[in-house]
Length: 386
Image (cartoon, rainbow, N blue to C red):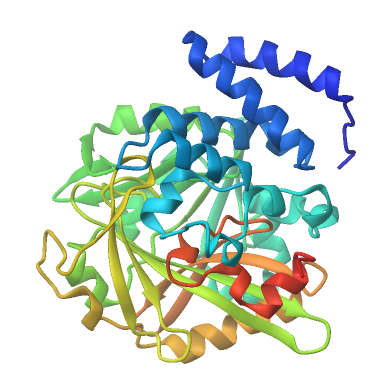
């Protein structure tokens, strides 16, 4: 990806224009310009300056959990969010154990940039991961420009909407997900039960479902993966997704440097990484869960002991297939050694695991609640941090 280079004055002019597009409130506009310029001065890569500035503005104006404005401004000066002082315990003594936004998004740290298209588009990831097809959800169709193209199939013609409806009836559950984007945006869970269709747990007529499918573009239709029974029971059959951080070291090979699990609740709904989700650390040796944290608004993490819906004690859960999951992640890391930093989202199942997606530069904010990023030598090495 070509790197756009702006002079400082050009960046300041761009910041003012962008702030007017985003905000009507004068304070937010002023803070956006301040934080965007701060990111620029700290060598944040050009296409992430906007993200850093917006995160800082939201944190400054909206995160309210006893962190003073003075402390927030200090946090921004070292590339951290004020909410991380509350949720992760970052302070002036230990902040160097946690990777800053300035380092994470630094121009020199996009080590996977040559290959990021592999992971930015989910169909590309599917083909890149062909050797591990048994450890991915089955992919049935790709939809583009009103064409429904079969995947992993020897059919000699495209499919129809009726074929997708029949598959939903046959499989009982299917997933449609946008090929570009994250955080659950563009995710649909289709279900057939008791003679009716459902979309994201809401009953929908056949005609409405047909219209929805016809509206999809650049979408995959895949298998719906059921998590291991222990997690389905604990989470009221919502969702269970593990995030793992892998680093391929040229001398020591693949290294698992962090892992946590997102557990669903009735409040969180069907997609993770939103308020209502429960995060737990995963012990890298045993797969046992520890330090459960309930996610509130604006990334406010608070300790929790029992699941609010099932009342299961969360730190008594563990990933039974953890050894095979870790070995599978190491195999993927070896396979993709030219992209040495990978963040993978994985569903643990009763007999193994399924890799949902791979992020070439996945965020580790939630991982750091359990594994401060810069305490690991392999993380420091791959990000060129002494």
